[in-house]
Length: 504
Image 1: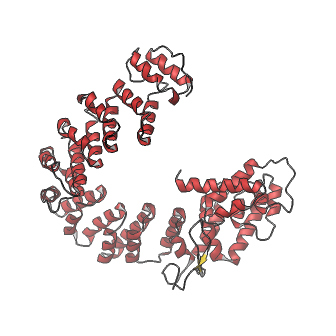
Image 2: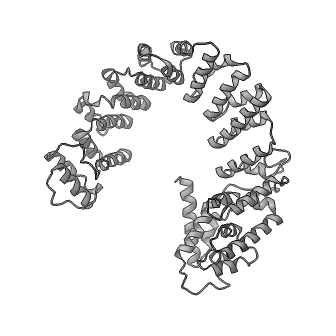
Image 3: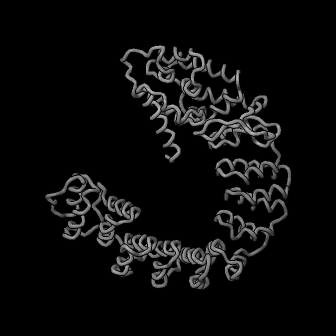
């Protein structure tokens, strides 16, 4: 659950609690109808906390409470009140009680007929969430039918961001920059991702845009799912109608790797396969793979081109190194090792890519990489720790332990701890217990999680049996386990139960 999802749910619950206590200020935080999860949480909170046995609400009670009341007769009667909050009416359209459901659907259909633009823009995010319920598809089908019909002109105001009051638009030509300006165009720009994807699908079904506009939208889109839909449509149009250089260029400039990969494959149909070499050092491995494929299809040698990039000091980049490692051979390891000596601005990312490349070639050397745990670049230290984890048992434990001591750079301590943990056994436990009280909250959290991962009801921890030091270390971890689990672990390890074991 993301932070925005949690925020909306918490706001809905808080508003319901405030209203149940007799206040109305709790509703102010999410009155904007485009916060669907707040309304859903509000409804659930009222119905969960409202006692169905207490006397029914009177006419003076808030309409919001009556629309969410556990008694279906109360909910049905509330729907007859003029200007009932439409978000709650939408929720009642998926109500389990048929009488409530039918009455709510009449109200929503009337609101849509009276003011289609406002209703569609305000409520589509909520309607899409409720479509997952057993009775929730009716409202979605209603809205989809309205959007597929004659274009609904966008209203003259521009909705504010969620959480703010609405404000009128300035004297702009249109809200979306399109002519004609429609509600569907506004929904395609919605900050709510399900709404944007829904509007995109309806737009593509209408065949509104040509290949250049499809490719432009794919390139500019930041949501991966929506961008892929636009890109697939653009590639299908290119396949059907023939090459279009402007459309291909738009795909190649895309923010999303899948879009750029589609643009690279489209170069072949456009007769521009020679440009594939320009994408061998793309920041995405998927795009680099497509570029290597196209180079081979065009009769070229992607290995030679990637090696030339790495050998040229003026053209080598971390992504060029990554691309070379993806097609290099074990004999190319010396070229990557030479990059570990690079220094200067931006060299950290280059050295980190070289370490990762050596690991991909299975050509990393523990003695060569050991000093890199102390590298000033966090990326280099991290990559070195990943490479040193498999041969961690070959490294001196005292040398590694010295690098998790307070006072050293945080990235060095994290990298050394990763290698110590990879050693397993009592060395890993000793390091984890030492970090349980560390000043660094990140290290404390990771250490606690790794100590807790020792417990399994199916097998004993991978620790020496009957070892007094293991018992002493477990004594310092009682706050991480319940009394039962700690007793089971001690029994599995053959360690006498400590008299002070308790839930910490």
